[in-house]
Picture (cartoon, helix red, strand yellow):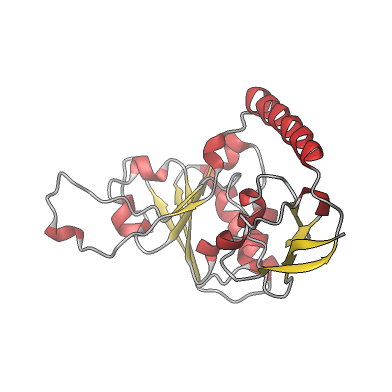
Amino acid sequence: MIRKIIHIDEEKCNGCGLCAKACHEGAIDIVDGKAKLMRENFCDGFGDCLPNCPTGAISFEEREAPAYDEAAVKKAQEAKKMTDVKHEHHEGGCPGSRMMQFSRGETDNTSLHAAKPLSRLAQWPCQIKLVPVQAPFFDGAKLLIAADCTAYAYANMHEDFMRGKVTIIGCPKLDAVDYTDKLTEIIRDNDIKSVTIVRMEVPCCGGLQRATENALRNSGKFIPWQVVTISRDGNILD
């Protein structure tokens, strides 16, 4: 049948995944870093995905397509709901991993009362394991890669390091993972302007630094970067 259905321009698509999250019917998947309409019979033609696309890659078209199958959509939604519940219960999955970007003004904190510090976190999620490899907030970003403990050890973390940066955090010891591959994708596939690594002086934090250095090399890009080490009593060592 001829009906209205969405069209995705892969040239414009940046793979952020916002359209897939906005599509309640589950018609869109991210494949090889691009959004694709994988299930035409799941697309109701209402276009909830359109306003969520930051690059204007989605539009309507009228063409031959299978009819919208509401029963199949509901069955898939129920199956996904059960999978999500199992994932949250058994694997620690969290609804709080939904991506968000915050608008942080450049207000000078020196003019504010000392008892009211400002958060400088620019986006959500911030955990390396949860953050997507491509997202609008990475476009033109100064990237801060910080060890979990640094924000607790160093008192002025938000103003001195996080301000004006996209912050992602992790602990290679507790996560028991090598971040190299994911950090490589983030640096390679986004317009990152600089990288700052903030780590603790303890040896296990070397894993975070090594992963970032490897990712910078693997990305094939020449990006300014620096390492700052925080002592256990909360001072900057270098």
